[in-house]
Amino acid sequence: MRKSWRIAASSVCLLVFAVGLVWGDRLLALTRETRDNLRQYTEILEVAHERYGSEIHYRDLVFSSIQGMLRQLDPHSNFLSPDAYDTMRERQKGSFYGLGILVGMRDEQLTVIAPLEGTPASRMGLRAGDMIIAIEDEPTDDMTLDEAVSKLKGPKDTQVTITIVRPGVSNPMDITITRAEIPRTTVRYVHMMEDGETGYLRITEFSRSTGEEVAEALEHLKEQGMERLLLDLRNNGGGLLDQAIEVADQFVPRDTLIVETRGRVRGSDEKYFAEGDHEPLDMPLVVLVNSGSASASEILSGAIQDHDVGIIVGDTTWGKGLVQTVYGLSYGSALALTTAKYYTPSGRLIQRDYSSLYDYYARNNVPSENGQGPETGLQSPDPPEPGEGDPTYRTDLGRVVYGGGGITPDVLVEAETEPELLQFLRLNNAFFHFGVRYADSHDIESLSWRPAEDVLREFQEWLATEDLGEADEIREAFSDPDTAQTALNRIRAEVFNSTFDNDAWYQALIEGDHQIQVALEQFDRARNLLSRRLSVDEEDRLAEGAGEAPEEAEARSDG
Image (cartoon, rainbow, N blue to C red):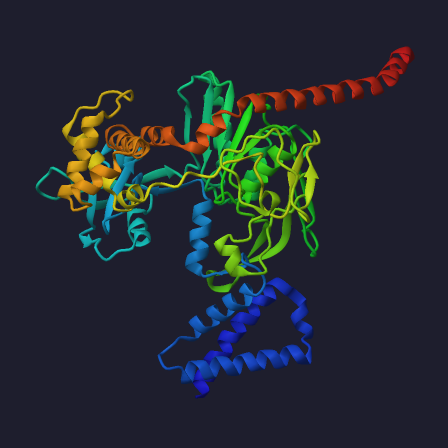
């Protein structure tokens, strides 16, 4: 019993020490109430360990109690175990050492989705659709995706042997690959669109290299003749604050506010301004966002909207505006504690209400115009007047923007709901497997290739042979022109992924994207907005010059 008590006391001490790293000397003067509460906690910990119906470790009890404590504060304060902390720090790095493949689970089998161009996997000839059945002779059947990825990564210049099964090849193949540095690209898709003047740039997250990646991508697009930019931030969950600021610096005017943080502790009130380290874009800009755009994405889109340098299109963003400061704790763990809130340049609070965690995670309380859901394809010059009680703010040019949490787009466009059959086929990886099969048996030489009706018929026959639906039901579903066209677009994308690369897959995939099509229609509006913005900036410069003229004249006369 004494031994158990000592262990329990040690566990509690770890908890107290963790809190102590945050609160410092305050623990030196514990009140009687605080000591009583800690004593009660220790007693509960001991009883739970000794009397619970199954064996349970003190470590698990302490970690769970910490998480419970933090959940009472807000949705984003979080205790990071050593593994979680390591994962977080690795994700923020600009690179890692591995093979250079995108992998995923397809039919419960670890499968290569795409090799990344120029990486060891690409040079060794790995293809989309290759199933990795073993890593260093250890079967992957019972591995989680994270476990498999961890085994594929390793120190630079070390080797790993994988066993693959390739469609159309009878026997498994062992391939030994030397690990190399793989850039953790956050600007994953950059290309010119078919009109020859629109550049497309998608940021998937904000890590240590994002600002530099965006600068390089913009320069690359300009060299290709870009005259306007479509910036896609959909499903970008955020990342590093300094990188959001560095990216915003490439779009908003110099010396303008990008984001403000406000909190109650010393040092939490900060204002971050554009330093003008990059040449201004100075071309029409449209930004795509959705409910998966959060945190750093909202900082960037909010700054662009408030300073009138771009038009925001899509769904209302998530509304994650709580600032976490990460405190390293003992034994490799960490505490991500909310210390402030984010505000856009116009003063909008990005964070939405989280008084009900269920509603928060289900997104049931996202504000919208007049208390209603967004209207699909709404393209009014300015959003309608808000409903009663909805806070409004003004941009630099006086446009109305909405508070209440998240960034409300200038043009609200819901993502189209995919027909049930296509959802079923996608979840069962039908397009992926058919695309691999088709590419293996056909010579696709150009990105101009488009599947004809006979490919759709072949796909339907294949679905029936794979028991993915009844032939009559499949035929009836594909009699709808929109469903048929969407299926052909997906087949084309998967064939390109297997034949060319992941970039070709993505370019083909977004051709039928409804939100992108609406976004492309907003460039006239973006051009007019930019023109107004530049006119105001020019007037300000002239006004400043006029104010300095007498001093300059006096200086010349003194000379």
